Image (cartoon, rainbow, N blue to C red):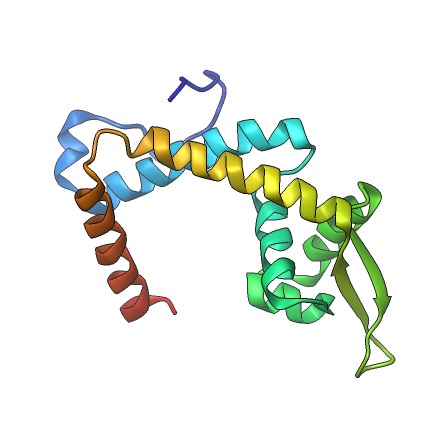
Length: 155
């Protein structure tokens, strides 16, 4: 993976003495992947949170802005800004909510589906590059272990 700009902030500076701390390694690995993904998504005019919103809409279908924010754990004001940007790019549209006339449903557009497909391919490329030093079995084991941790602590 390419080196990132020197002015890019990181959660914690990496020092070899920290390599014994699994949590530090997870944070650093996540930071590297997120930065690489964000750099490449910029060519599509979106960021990593926008990818998450498009991905969620693709899987959930049209849902209210409030439901989307709750699902993504994004507060209302920032969610409005994200939806405004995505709507301005023609990737989503606000429509009347079918069950709540006070709310808008957020809908993925055809252009949004195309951008999501491109962004998903970028995500696959990033994963392939980042996890290349691991065998397929090691990568699957890491994924399984991380899912186990997530299930017991965060989901």
